[in-house]
Image 1 (tube, rainbow, N blue to C red):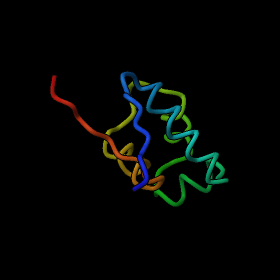
Image 2: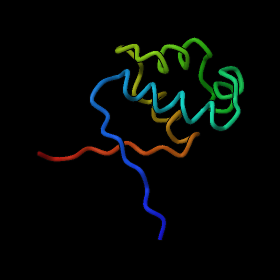
Image 3: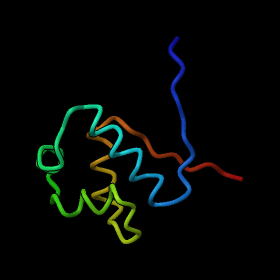
Length: 75
């Protein structure tokens, strides 16, 4: 069984870094990834830079595109 890596996301910047890393590892440009997720290039760029006002629905589309999951943990 392959162990999956998990990284706790505490800030919009943390999430943006994960998305950017996955996009670059996939060899996609911002333009390619935005087109595939049906979002604007500006939105994706702002999301990757950790802009705090990003829309959750569009953010979830980007996560799905790159096979990333978002979890909520109860404390």
